[in-house]
Length: 274
Image (cartoon, rainbow, N blue to C red; front, side, top):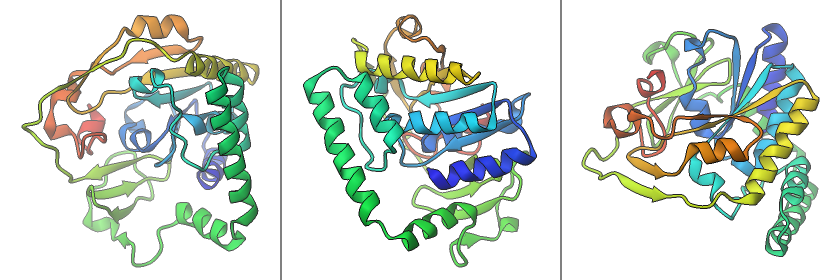
């Protein structure tokens, strides 16, 4: 995350923004900032999860946005586990520790802290530098000439990389989109019953809301849809539990249209504009 956060700081220094979108690869590929009426930066980072969003959201306040928009799927709020990625920062571990009040949850956090300490102590500075450079530019041989791909409005200085999902185009403002990919058009809609919101996730997000508020930034939580997934939950209960503003898109009709998805999780270039 550190390299893209640095990219945000450099990019926004020349062109201030009102909103910063924070999340994983779905954030990077779903948010079409060119369709918004206000300047934004897309801090979506593939492979991250809720346990890392605290440090990412706090870092976003370095560019003084009016609001940070956190994109998650609704089931994340109902799961007892955190889905550790192994790349959490100290701020993330502290935020989760403070949100957890169960022995199991805190033992899990201690385990991740030990792992993070070992990772930081043994990681080669050369490897860290190479990872940071990867966000700044695609290495020769990995990029597809931009002239050979479809460039969508608002995508400045695009670079493209071929992946298993399809052709991934990345833009200067942090966002990207996927050309190609395919989903099972015959797949049946999966109903996911979500009953009890995890109190730890509520404490985590409410503490993040308060931290951002102290820095003059609002927190907005946006609940995302997933391909042919019918979430059985009550968004009003989520809104009542969270201090942040909640925008529920988890029931959007877009979830049922196979032409708008590159895989079961990511919208394609057309889907992100809907």
